[in-house]
Image (cartoon, rainbow, N blue to C red; front, top):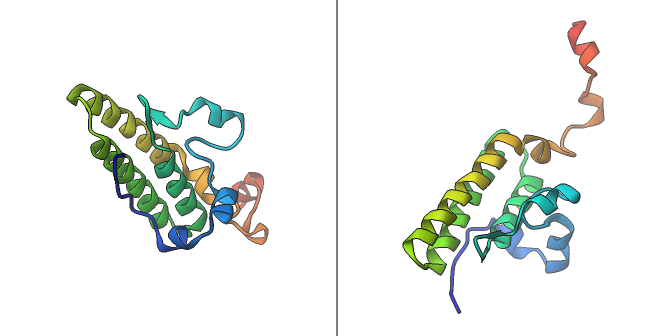
Amino acid sequence: MTRFVLYAPPSYIAARPEVRRLVVNGCGPAGWKGELVPNTLYGLNVAPACDIHDWMYVAGETIADKHEADRVFLNNLLRLIEAVGGPGWLRWLRRRRARVYYEAVRLFGGPAFWQQKNPPERLITAADAANT
């Protein structure tokens, strides 16, 4: 069995598995869109890295927290790839796909990160914003 070490925040490590399951869902968004994003990189299960990333998104409060979660995600993906090893060409393909996953969350993960974080009393409509 291959041993690898991933970074996870203390709150993730301390959480009971049933609590984690309420927050994390592997790679990709919840719902049918998540089916489009596999939990594997050419046969390598990377769901643990995705789960930690999900946890950090829910726990984060600032844009700096989002950036840290995204960097930790890439770091954990690369740790998994290097720990499992394999032929150089396969590690190269997996690292390339890891970068795609990272760029996707970096560029398009904002709505997932900010979900449930903006209190309703601080929200205005686009029309109200345009009239100010």
